[in-house]
Length: 273
Image (tube, rainbow, N blue to C red; front, side, top):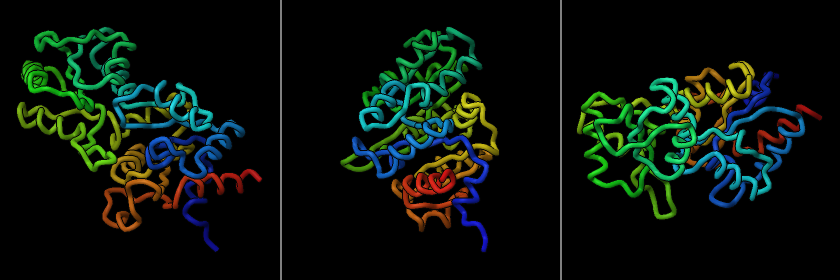
């Protein structure tokens, strides 16, 4: 009898990259098996990183949210798209570079914490960094376009075009990026998923190799595609945005498809029994 897909993906894997919303929780409710999954990883000293495209919260915000749901997660276990973006911008533009930012508090605080100077003057900007901004004004868009036309690169925290909310899908950061590109012709460099950049940064932090690492997510065109581009194992959970019927037409095929994180936890228990 052949090995089932989930066992095949988990074989030899010791490090986990995990998406948040739809995988670990829905709002303030933990998804069944999520707490047990993380407690198991801690008990067996298996490294993990939580990878989120959400640009509105800091790693500390995310860790606190999870701790309130009894998950043993610290700030150092979280990699947000603002954090990954700050790391990239520092490598590209240098420490203390002058940044024109479109984004909310999580992105702003992260950039300041990394020592960047923030500016609203287009002629001072070394780069334009764009994340979700639900208070975005025409004037700020105008100034960003001026900075881009002067040659500043456009660096995006994430490409998500729609933002899921309780009242339906609202414009996401990808909609702002489309505006800026249409107005200036400047294409964004995207740091968040499905780019492999965040996964590569997280693996460097965990000191894990591609062969040792697996990505678990509910977004087949974000999490799973990013995992494929980073050449790590991939597990799609059906507790979030993707349905099993979506797999056939997806850009990347997951290594395994399971109902939820509980299935992964139960298989790990079997492997350590």
